[in-house]
Length: 107
Image (spheres, rainbow, N blue to C red):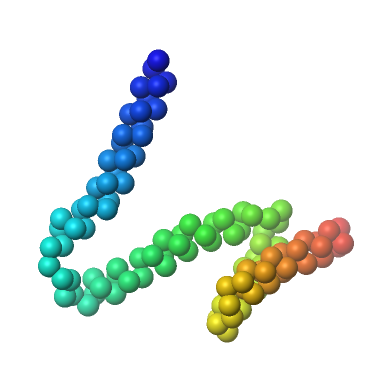
């Protein structure tokens, strides 16, 4: 019985935090934001959050740090040259695969 209460309390806390995160900006910023600094900051927040979630997963997704770095470098280079997302993702996977093959072949 205690576990059920703990589960529902956890769900209620998570729902409350999620609701506050979504409602708080609407309650605080009633008028249009005029500050260029704040607008620039808010523009880059999604990219920073995506990078903070993705980069650690990239480097822990393969058997070795070297193959993960190889795939990451391939993805960064293709992104720099503005290639498509599908090509970039497939090429990064191929880079990791080839790096893993080379690491296995070398010992």
